[in-house]
Figure: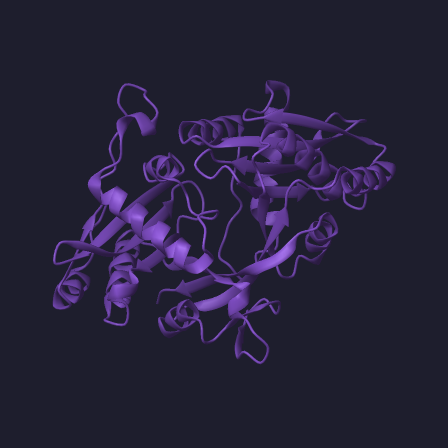
Length: 380
C-alpha cells in the first residue's frame, strides 16, 4: 500500500496530530475474527464511531459492531480496506479510511472522515481528508466517493438546501458534513432517504399486502433461505447480484458493473458469518424457467438485537410489473420476525428518485428517518 505524500504528512504534523495506519490482526488458524481480538487502535476507532452515532442518532442501530469492523477492515480479494487513526497528545482525535475496489471500479476509491467533537474546527478534518486523498492518488485512483447521513429532525421548514445533481433530494447547507464536503470540492450526486419500520408489523397488514401481491405474481414462487443460499440457486443469485450493481439508480456516480459468481457469493456469506451477522433472504423464482428474478435481504447483528438492516432489493428487468418487490419483502419480513423475535425496527435506504421502491416501503409502514448524501470528486 502506498503511503501518503510528504505534503499530507506535514499537514498533519503542523496541527500536532499524528496519523498512522491501524493494525488489523490477522486471523489465527482459521479462527473467526472475534476470537483473535482487535488492536488497541481499532478499538479506539470503534469508540469514535460509537460516540458519533450516539451523538447523531441516540442509538447504535447504524453502527457496525466491533466484530463486524474487525472482519471488514481485513478486506477481501475484491476490495482493499485501509483505516487510519489520528492522535493528539496520544489521545484518539479522529480517523479516516480508504477503500480500493480490486476487480471492477479500479479508478475509484471510497473516502471516509470522522473527527471527535472536541477536535473539530481546528483543521483536523481537512488534514485527514488530505491524507486519505493522497493515499488514493498514490494508488492511481481518479474518482473519489463518500457518504454521510443527516437525521430528519435537522431538516426543518425553510432550511436552505443543497440539491443533488440527480435532480431528486437535497441536504441542508447548515449541516457540517454538507458544508465540509462541498468546500473540499465534492459534488452531491445523489440523496437517499433512510426510513424506519416499527416491528412487529401487524399480521393483518402483511396478509393483505402479501395476498394482493400474490394475485399479480401467479407465475412466480417464493424461495426462502437463511445465511447461505441453497446450492441449486447460487448461480442465479449471483447473476441477480451482478445486476444489482447497475440496475438501481446511480445518478452520476462513477460505478461500473460488478461481476458476481458463486464464489463471490460464498465469500460474502462467510464474511458475514465470521462477524456474527445473520441473514434472511426471500427470492422470487419464475415458475416457467426456474430462474430467480427478484430478491431481498435483511441482516441482524447480535450486538444490536433490536434492529435489522435492509440490504439489497432487486426485481430483474423483464419481470417488473408483477408486484414481486412487495411479494419478497412481505415474505422476508415474516421470516425475520419469526427468526429474530427481539427485533423492534428495520432500517432501509432508497434513492430519492426510486419512487417505486419507496412506495412499497411506505405501504409496509416505513417512516422517514433521515437522508444520506452520496458525494463524488474527480481528481484532475
